[in-house]
Length: 374
Image: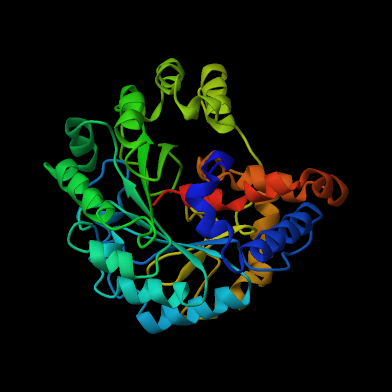
């Protein structure tokens, strides 16, 4: 989210609990930068409620996972209570494809009914079928993955012929409901060398149709699930990226500008401080808790301890210190979600943070985490 999209995100910014969640995040960031444990829960918790999926995406291998026995609705209700008590505000329901779970709307309700903002990350294939249920679920935001401006690019990356057309139909089905009665609707393009040349037409196609348009660079991170693309596709051409964002709002985005510069100089993502386990956490379909959205290090399990116990554990704190001293990888999560940027803004030093935390900066702060990868 950007400040110029305030009107789009006003229901989040003005929601009960948002201001206190931002303030809790500030306290967490200050504590982290002073070597102390966080004083509140994560601002954002990403919940992968299943790895089952009706797509066969090149860059994601979760659909290959044969495991079942995912967390039950009762277990998610317990997690919702724990996160709410810790002051968490943003919940991302993701997968796999979350809409393949028959109880997905009950899961969403567990968090929404407690006043938390819920983002549903979906590939959109079932959006037409469940448009009314999505509208009525209490979800705040729906983020639909569309990997290109053409069916040819998208369907190749997603591995399902005809999927682009079906997703378009789902988006327009949800748009039939008045904006005041439906969730915020966004489309997000995962950018690789395969489709980078379609950024400009992608933006032109959707910016006057949906509520927001997002870009997200693909990457290859050791031990992650996003490892299925060829190296040539993963290395985004900075000249193509710069050409395609010219004339769009993306050209003024500070991260996109830094990304282009970093790709030209070093061929890699720009480095940024990591706030994994401080402002964010991830829970996989079986209750395993990770500080990082890439799921490198398992800290504990919801099926063994409640989330508060895991979040406050010595094991979690040890991993926070390790990440603070030696972040082992470069990822887009901190950057696309702007977690690192706002972590620095909110907590670089107590005195400096207070000076920099202007009302405009506060308004433009943490809702950006809606941009995380599903």
